[in-house]
Image (cartoon, rainbow, N blue to C red; front, side, top):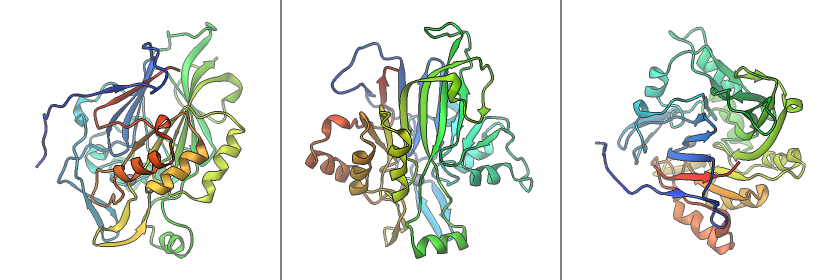
Length: 328
Ligand SMILES: [Zn+2]
């Protein structure tokens, strides 16, 4: 079934126009929306999904999907991690094996809906360290290795996480029906600000830590959203601050599936281009584009859109197992 142990030459990519050779941070692409973001000893795992080609996920009443790809590494081979960032509670982003095997105390930052599911007292083993962020709410994650300091000796490297708007179902009657059926869960995007915190030592300070935090690098992750009006709030909220790197969930996920393509619930190539124009990030990396049979918009479609728009210099393509290095 799965092709474990397959070897392939894995690439390290940098900014297409300005590599210094001394990049101090990276995004490692594992597959679907699963990545490891690493900077100064802090490691954040996004949307953990370690299923293999041929495995199935359940995505709502009557909707299942088969995985077509393998993750770049196995779940039990992961390096030490600080937290999981979970955009929404859907099996192609948090599969059952991950859910069963994860230590109950492991920190997870997610949506209020996913927090309710993961911590529910009706579960046999509820998770105990789940932090919910609504749209535009923030919290600070700090480095395990707090001996590292910045230019200012009292500052430690930290990542500030802010929930960003997202809509996994199109607005209108389908959205109303979805609210009734509770079929497709609500989703967040994320803004990750890599920077320096002063006077804070513990992981997971809730609330707005902005007064004690200096941002050096901004990463926006779209989450499983469509291109909806709510996303236009993001540049307004940023007030002109530049996004350095965007991870964009594509795939044009269409349910219930290819045989009955009724409702698209993630961005396809055209919507991806719209989001690139809206966010205007320095670099965009597409993820979540070919791993399941409900992903009907292939990456080649997106590449064509980008080429026609003349935006090739703003996009870096990663295969599973590739890493993008950058400087904070
Ligand atoms: Zn998804």
